[in-house]
Length: 613
Image (spheres, rainbow, N blue to C red):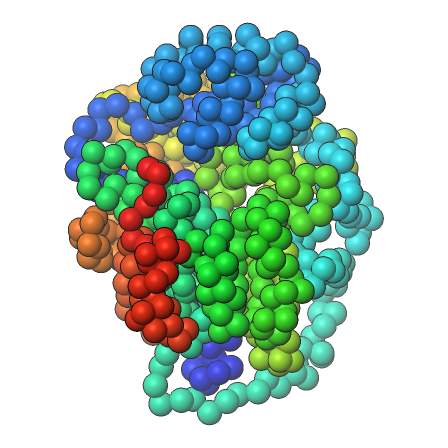
């Protein structure tokens, strides 16, 4: 919506935007598994798609520690952490399916060590080994974390009744102002009615709102590329920078296709998050690569990076230096934990955020340990960053000054998990794991139906919906109990509800049962295998996935963005770039001659073939 406003101010053309929650959840939860299935040609759907990441949340002598190992290097470091470097010789363990297959042995191996160590000691050692690590906090302990305290992340709500996270942005090194109290009815009516927005004369040609904006994309993995993907989709010329000596780590998730030629081009995450971009390689460890980077900075409207803070500092790309090179550029930094504080240089991925913020604490069954939700924090961080870019562009056009934003991943995640801190500071309650249940709904759960891995989801969050559910069930005697007429009573009888609904669902087809419930006004759905999520008729009807030809992957349908503009028929204009695909094109635009480009290639400052795989 902000991009449409930005575009309207430039062109005079407004926009009608249709946002889909289903599509947003598909990206965050399914994570392109349908595209992965199509790319692999996998037709074997008998085995469940579910898996449990390991190592992840592990018991310690005094609680839990959260880790994740997204790379072989991190996994090797984890083996050093648990004092089992001998296991590095077992290359099969580097693949998580093998660790799942040897579940009991693997967890006995890990837990026999972690249970003898304190959480604090393990975190200190894991951090030194550059392993993504965090304590597994609840709504109370997260308030006590020294890094979050030092950065002033939690503030009193204007109502005075509870604490809440700050907005996840610093602008030119300063926190954005704290939120005002919620408005009284009609409080600002006169002020709003008095405003008359400027309305430029519409241009003859409709363009995407960010057409003409150049974005320098110094990001890797998923969170950063999702941010710049949004800008590219909306029309920006995004140049994604890698190095043949150090590829974007998300390319490594194409390792499932390691037997295929150019397998690093086959990561569905990379293919999805980098569509509509150009791609170049620059060895930033070489002064000639840094010189090209400085030229790109000088010619860019927006610069986005999500490396560890010390990386950009080592390259000399501080906020001050970027401002010297290009005072009008919007500079967005996406550190895991922020640019200051004791955890400034710690490594963090989405899983780390879920562990530290409390998301993992409330995920799982009551009788089980915490589990990571697995999904939302990367695209969430990306959306915060792209929002900051649009705010910066809008402000820059008015002032001529490009603001510099700090968008710490942990702070965006804390805002998503704010309910736990609010509940604790307002009422002293620590929210716990409830499985598929929820405070605002009863019954709510997943119920197995006829067939293999066929499940029915039901969520009743209003008394009228309960009456409709009873009608579908045939108003059995047990459902007519007076205490079930209201949500509080149903919450107290959830075991009974699950037992009865489970018996009812077990004799039914999941699709037919879902259709019957939906027709009656009961929120319900047939649980979809993530590998088939793109086949949902609603997603197909809206054209959520778009097919584009790729030189290595071929024609592949890839999810786009979770909204539609009335003026845009298709979002995908070009596939994700091959490694170094646009080296010559971009360097020529920077003024490099053919001889200079060839010299850079010979020195491996640029290139098309990865080194050291």
